[in-house]
Each structure stands twice: as C-alpha cells, then as structure tokens.
Image 1 (cartoon, rainbow over the protein chains, first blue to last red):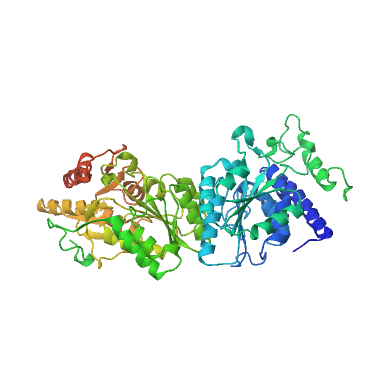
Image 2 (cartoon, each protein chain N blue to C red):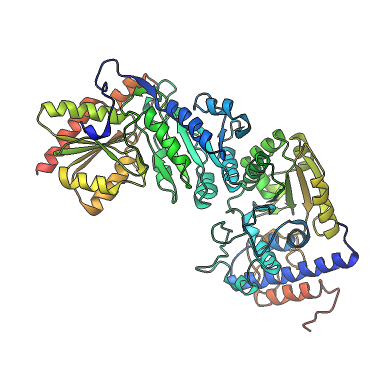
Length: 295
Length: 328
C-alpha cells in the first residue's frame, strides 16, 4: 500500500510522541535503557501503525503476525507503542519495572498479552522466531514472523545457529531486522567484537539482505514490503539507526545504553537535574527545528 | 513384591529381558505422534542414538534436524511451542539440558511452553564413552526450575508410558534415559501416572526410594534382605518433580528409615529432593546413594556401577547402616 506524504508525516509525529513517552516512563521507573528504545521508535511506529497484521483488542488473534523482540531490554519502546496502538491504557506505562506491574523490566510473555515471548537474555530471539516460522510452515498459515534484534547480540553463538537453520530451511515467512546502532554496553560494537561485513555474513548463510535508514519511515515500510516478495530465502533488514535518536546529548553515545536521564551526573553530559527537561524539549522541538507546543 | 503393580514375572530370572530405556522413548514418541498431529521432533545430530529415528522416518514433515547446536535445539523448540506445537527435543543429557540451561530456563520454563526435553545417556552406566558423556547433574539443574516436570523412568516400558503421558501435558518436561540395556522391571499393566510414585515391594522396616535402572537393583537388594528378616519397601520414584510427597512421607512414617539411590550426583537429585521433603515434615534417617561429588570414567557399565558403589551389596550395606541410626 503506498503512503501519501501526509501519512508519512503522521507516522513521524506518532514516533515523536512515542519517544517523549519513553523518556517519561523511564524517568518514572528510575531505571531502564534509553538509547535503544529512542533509536527504534520509528521502526516500532511503522510496525504497529502500518506493517503488522494485528488486533490490539484481541492480542491472541490466531492470524496475527508474530513480532518477536529478541533484545528485550529495549521493551520501553514496545510498551509505549503497544499502549499508543490500544493494547492497554497509556496510564499503565508509569508502572514500568514496579512491583506487580505487567510491564516487567524485560518483557514477559505470560504477564502481558501481545508480547509473544519472554526475552532479555540476548541471542535467543531469532531461534524462537525460526521455530515459529517452522511451525507456521507446517500448518501453512498466512501469518508472518518478524524478529527484531540488536547488533550486540550478533556476538552470540545462538544467533548464528539460528541464522544457519533459517537459511537451510529457506524460511521466507521470516523477516529479521537488526538495529545497527553500533553500540553495546561496553562500547562500540566494532571495538567489542567486530561484526562487519554483516551483509556478506548473512548472504553467505543464504539470507536476502536489505540495508535501510532506520529513521526513514518510507524506507522501513518498503523494506518489509520487499521482504514479503522474496521467496526461497529469509530476509534480514540491516537498519542503520542512531542510538538515543532525538536527544542530542544521548545520540551515538554508549553511556546511555543502560540508564535513563535524570539519574546521575556524567562527565560531558548535561547536569542531572536538567537531563529530562532537555531531552523532552529536544523531542518536542525536533532538536530545535520547530517550536514546542508546550512553550 | 507388590502384586497390585504387575511387575515382570521373570524379573529375577537369569534371562530377564534387557532393553535400553531410550528404546521405549522411541516407541512412545511414534504412538503419541499418531494421536496428536501437533507433536514435532527436533534433534541435535543424534537422531538414531536418542531413538528419534522411527519418528523421523514416519513423520518427515514434522521432524527438524537442528545439527550440533543445543542452544538452538531448545530455543527453536520454544518457538515451535509458541506456534502451537508440542516439540520433543532430544540429545544427550550432558548437552541438553547441560549446555543449554539458560535457554531452557528463559524460553521454555519462564515462558511456560510445552517443550519436552529428552536427555539420553544419563548416568554412569553410559560406560566406555567416559565422563564427558555421563550426565550426573541433569536432574539437579532441571528440578530447580519453576514449571519444570522431571521424569526418570526405570525401564523401556515405563519410558514409553512416560513419553505418551508427557505429550498430553501442557507443561515443560524433562526425561532422562539410559544408554545401556537394563532389565525390564515393569509390564504394560504396571500403573504409571506422572507425579505418582509406586510401591514395587511392600515392607515396613526401611524404605528404598530408587529411580531409573537402579530400581531393579533395589528390588534385588530387598529380596536378599528379606532372607535376613528385614522387610524392605521399594518405591519406584519415576517423577523427581513434582515429588509424590504423600507416598514418601507415608514411607518415612511407617518405615522410619530411608535409603535413596540414583545414577546421579548425591547432591541435588532424588536424594536431595527426598531429604528436603522428609527433613521438614517427618525427619527420619536418610542415606543417599549416588555418585559422590566426582566425575565418572570409561569402563563397562557394570564395572562402573561397582566402582561407584551402586550395587546390590552396597544397597544392603546402606540399609544396615541406616537401620542402625533408626534404632538409636
């Protein structure tokens, strides 16, 4: 389905609201990951508001596409996007990481309908997606499997075991997406464990590979469309993203991988007391490019 | 003997039939798969050895060869279960659940999906392959996991029944199997229910709670002890978790002393779970027989069982020592 310029703009605005809610929920929780969720907001928005075949009012709908989030630690972006698309009230977002909450620090399948699987320990999402795709193929279903991964978890052996099995079985009902933001907890991916040439590696394992700007809604939607038309191979979309996207002091800085703003003073960063204010202001003004409706 | 449980009438004959318990799994899987089309089989390059071969040949569309990748074995299995399947995943117990414990914990147990983990080559009786392939820790690492059911059948017929029973259960399960031929203790008529231990020999002086192929040796020891006027209750504890607390506490109360025996480390297995139950509810002397916090080695199965103290004679000595504590 082709999108008008106005449709794209609406999705971009939705992604921006989602980023603001990510910051607010992390501040409320007092802990959690910042950079990854902000970097993946455009992709989650495109998925939940355009790409996925799903029904927020019926999360167990048998024909829904299965969206597996392998790197569970970026769940704030999934929770916020799910709330915005109607799975649960937006007010529930403030329970993140609190006792009794359905919004566990890492997503848990039996706690929150629509999460599809429990995740957090890295490197196991793609193989579960392969299992789902194999089950779907046996039953000749129409639903597709989409697996979102981080680049850091390309270090894990289990990931490559799954890459091999998917290639062997030509799982064309499986689309994976790698959040290529170049950071992981200990630093830049190419310093921790070099991944390049990532495209050539996946191609060698019999995958179809696409590379996109992970902040360009049109490119995101086109890539998932194209993946549907590839037969005989699974597709991986390498999405180049900016960690901390939308907040200048967080962008491309691995220090913000695992902490929310407003918790601690860090060298070279705005003072603790100003971090949240600056982040929200930058998101509301698109980093100074527009005027905030709150000013 | 307990006549209500229809044990093999030729049990103590020289020519008692001997079959590896893994064979029973192979038969049971085909039977279960004929009944339920959602059953799928996954194997990590040990299809013949873990006896998944017959299933793979009969249901090629439902069989997935994973290759030497046990983490993938567990997680692909979890994914298929999320897609509505009932996956049986098989390998050697040292590799699965040995190598892929965290994947089992998170994607199978915490997810609470009905993946059935089959670990063959459990115990010291694996024999010549040596310690790398003799799983002696598997029950400990599985029974500690919430949602997990742990089964250790005493022979091939029981393994067949257990396979069919776990196929019907919407829970994660682990079953350990033996490589070596072991005497067939039970018959098709012997009752089997997951979570229900069976009294195979009636007795009142001491209870031997055994699991796996050592149930046979426990019955041999009980027969010999009866000649010494010691009345021994032998309990086949095929389900390690959930433990049949009723049968075991009743044994503690009525017999006053317990010997446990397993082809597993003395830490964390059958002896561990029985002790946890008994010490908190009806404390009596317990003697735990098993491998004493050490690795196995190469050798013939019977030589190894002898060396590691898992023989009829050793059971008789353990009974004598626990009875001395009881009388104090």
